[in-house]
Amino acid sequence: MKRFVFFLFLIGLVGCSPTDIGDGGIPAVTRIATNLESPWSIDLDGEQFFISERNGAIVRIDEDGQMVREEVLLTEPLSSAAEAGLLGFVLHRDFNESSLAYAYYTYNRSGKPVNRIVMLQRDGEIWREKNILLDNIESGPVHHGGRLALSPDGTLFATIGDGATPASAQNPNSFNGKIVKLQEDGTFSIVSLGHRNPQGLAWNADGELYSSEHGQSANDEINIIAEGGNYGWPVIEGNESREGMISPLLTSGANETWAPSGMTFHNGLLYVAALRGEAILVINPETMEIRKIEGYGRIRDVYSDGESLYFISNNTDGRGTPSESDDVLYKLTIVNDEGK
Image 1 (cartoon, rainbow, N blue to C red):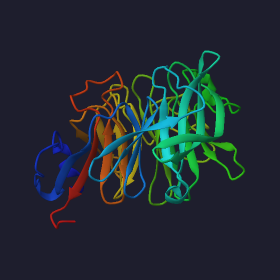
Image 2: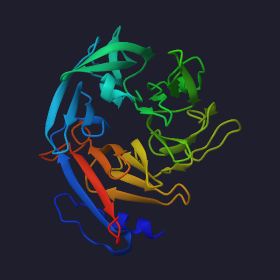
Image 3: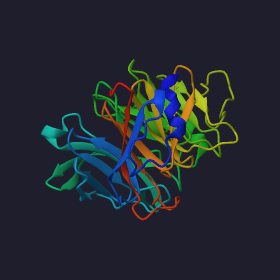
Image 4: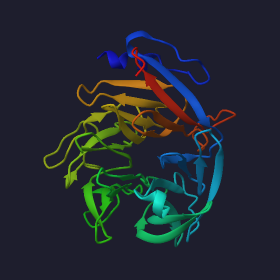
C-alpha cells in the first residue's frame, strides 16, 4: 500500500524541483510542450510524440520539446458540433517503416454529424487520408466516443458514443454505443454494447481490456470489457444491475463526476484522465483504491512508454479555464527511494 501515499500530495509540481515525500518516492512533473489547442490523443514513435488536436492538426514534438503543427488533409471538413473534430489517433505498429496511422474524426453529412475511422499516411510534414476503414456512423450534438487503441497483438479497437440517442446503445445493428475492433477482412465487429460515451481503452499485463465511460450526469464508469458483453446503458447505470447486463468495476457514484477519457496501465496501476474531475485517477485494480493527481485542470489523455507517464491538459476546449501556456504536454516520473 505504500506506493499510493505520494498521490495525495502531488499537486502543482510543475516548474518545481522534485520533492522527496518518503515511502511514496519522488514525483517529478515537467512540461514538455505548451500552447497545444484542444489536444485529444497522445502517441509516441519511440523518439517523437504525435498529438491530435480537435481542430484538425497533428502536433509533432521532439524530446527537446520542439513542436511542429502538421497539416492533416482529410476528404471531408470537420464537424463543428460540440465535442467533435479530429479525435482518436494512434500510430500503426510499423509506423517507422510505413508512415501509417489511424484516426477517428467527425464530419457533417446532410447537416448531421457522422463519425469515420480512416488510415492516414505521413508525407514529410503533411498527413493525408489514405483510405476509409469505417464510415457513416451517425452521431449527434454530443457523445461521439472517438478513442482508438491497439491491443497487445496490434488489433485496432475504437470506442463509439451513442450520439445522444441512448436507445442506439442497445441496438445490435448499430455501431453507436459500442466498442468495436477491426478484423482481418477489413470489417469491424462489435466487441461490447450498452455504452453511453466511452473514451478510454487500456489493456493490463494479462491482456484484459478496460474502458472508461461518461455517465449521464454522474455515475461515470470504469469497466472490464468482456467479448459480447452488454454494459447496460440506458437500461442501467452506475451500480444498478439487471440480468444479462454487466455492472461497472468502478463508478464515480451519484454525487461525483469524473468525465473519464484516455487511460493507460503503468507498473500495474491504471491511470485515467478525467476532464470534469480535473485529475488523473490512479486506480489499484486489486484493491479498487483510487488516488488523484490534481492541479493541471482538465486532463484528456495519459500515455505510458513503460518508464515514464505523459499526459495532456484539455483546458482550451471551451469548457476549461486555460492558463497562458495551455494546453500542455507533461511528463510524470516517479522515482522511489532506491533511485528506480
